[in-house]
Image (cartoon, rainbow, N blue to C red; front, side, top):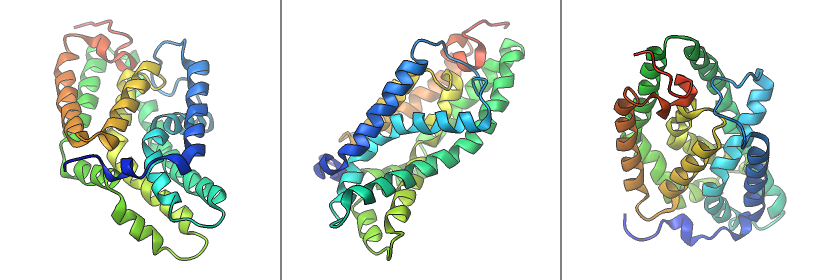
Length: 252
């Protein structure tokens, strides 16, 4: 693909409230967690609190790159645009909220690794990096990313949805593609620390570049290769995965 992605040409004006929601989520994240060190596992949160934090975190990370698609969808809406875009956004976030359930289980399981010998945490961190690295290079990643980068076909599909559930179905459908595109990047937070603010900033930049930059597919592949490199490097520098190695204390 050459030139700029179709979603960039669509602009993000009509999706301004979505960007406001993303900014509010970032403000909350920075003020609540910005001064804290990377924390392992579920950060001591129960399931309801974890899901709330997870949803706000994914709103902060995912909504900026989703705004152009939402704007393109908004241009297909003629009546009650603001209210319908709220429904679209809520449905999108509900997909990520649902993904918080397996994320909680994974975080709870991986949180126990910190109490094991350092070599165990390092091995698990290597596996987390490797999973992301491999997935970034798969055809499924390419397919989901292509839908996010050039969603004109999706807009035609959404226009065929009948009745009052159109916005709900469209938001959930697009959320599913974004989840398919970015789930392995979110898993990296288990290695970096679930609420590691700097890791969130970097991953948000990666997600945004993958979806919006002209060379987004190359970015995805480069991140995959970098992640595979980290899977090897973490054995020598455990501090690369503070969420699983306790900041780098090694017993190897």
